[in-house]
Image 1 (spheres, rainbow, N blue to C red):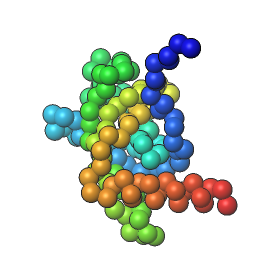
Image 2: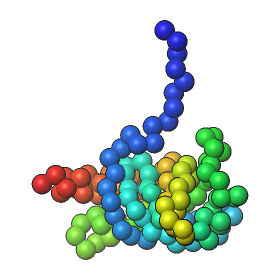
Image 3: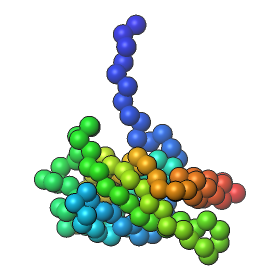
Image 4: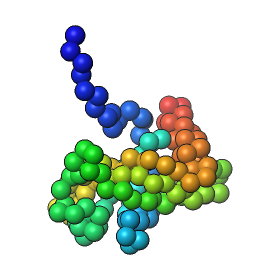
Length: 134
């Protein structure tokens, strides 16, 4: 049997739809704000306009595997009702898709979390998934 090269599975986690703002910081320190479309334990999908894509992605071309674009994301998730916490997560832009004339989806795969960020995201996603099956 021939060995098959492993491909990263970008959809290995269940996603939940959310609508919240995310602050994205590039490696040069510049920041912009976009909208989160969905979140999983391993990443977020954001919605942004063409101007944001120009700022985030050189040449506005989908990043090639291994040439991901590093960013730091900051967003809030509710830990308990009415008590949001800020999550800071480093990640890489690994996906870009145009969905309308001036609207794009960018997929950011998390690579690291500050503090308890992963636990906050994991608990939030688990809670939303369990409430959607009730």
